[in-house]
Image (cartoon, rainbow, N blue to C red; front, side, top):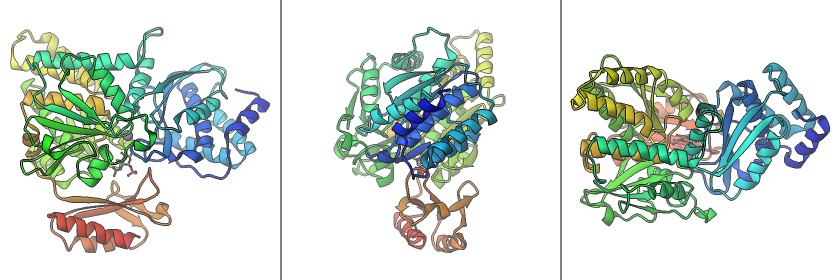
Length: 544
Ligand code: NG1
Ligand code: ZN
């Protein structure tokens, strides 16, 4: 570790005083101009994490996802690509807030962490870092790197601009592959495209049954998905990318992208309803860092129809359930669908009552869903907003491999089902929700099932719902229980919500503080659009 003088000089160059930070739903996320200090301390903390994990490489992503262009943020990724171990969020917050107080407070906290965590600062470690396309990114990455220099034995690789899932993928590959292996973006494209080609070859799919429109939210997903698809003969002429202006900073997430489409339940700028009415047309929107995706189309009347994270979860649940049956694995392999309170009631009903699947509900934020999903052999987890993935256990992989080795009838249905199960473990980025990989997986499932977007949509009908953002003086007063479905504070508020809910049909509503924005979110669903809207607005009023 650096000597006091060098440490102090770096600190003074990068840290400012006075701001209070919290490691939230997806790391630290604020207006970019207050982030220098926390970038610096996250550099230190990521180094400590790597040393604590015996030198394994940890990842760091500088992004504020779907937030407006003036925001930014940072999060730490575990060596296998998962979100930072929860017990360390506290250390990240404490170190940032001490640095925000004074140099001596920062130094004392740093020494204390080194001792408490028994970190040997002479050993070597590694960090891989990347950022999304925001204007503030390069400056914030410099502050981060300065923090990482506090532990000079920790080596940093800067991948420049990537999507969030690419950074997760490369973090995991850095730890998995032998030293000297060529690790970079290209590996990501090759793995996904190779899985795609094998799936489509196996199923005799020669071309995409739809014309595909991709709204890239004017974020980094645009150039990355174009780079990948330009390498594929299969996709040649089959798609078009709109809102790909990632170099105009102010355009990021503006009137487009997954969050805009999901929240406003309408088409993004740049995609028209006329082009979307044909049965062979499907559109999708990524968010700013391409870890979320929602699909949509327009029905014959020209009405916008959303195919969100809940629809993806049910699509994958049905698909994997069918494959497990065909492979004779329905009793050997356990599958679970993990949702949050924001999942539409109809999707939960469909999963449980129609598909007979096991459904679990967790708090918001993929780290919570992931944590629950890893307990099963196939864990399908999606937030309604389109953030999610499918993960497969080691037992699943071993079982499929053993059955494949024992299966000699290459042309049988069960053999093909086993092959497909195996290939989907490669097509899906299991480290984190990934717009590009989820897009390929959904397109593959629809092509294999020979489903149109309309057929997919008709599996169940969403209950009309409304999500509102309400500004309050202090959102930290809003505390919840029961996977965030009920408030315990402010006192008496939940009872008032319950009274309002009881006045509507098939209604549900809940309130929680956002972990990424300075606001409280109100969700309401009910039997009709008018009822969902009135309930949301009434609850919004009593929350203010
Ligand atoms: P918050 O701001 O805590 O509601 C939002 C999303 C989460 C998750 C995170 C991280 C909703 C209602 N909330 O969290 O699902 O995606 O951002 O980006 O969509
Ligand atoms: Zn995102």
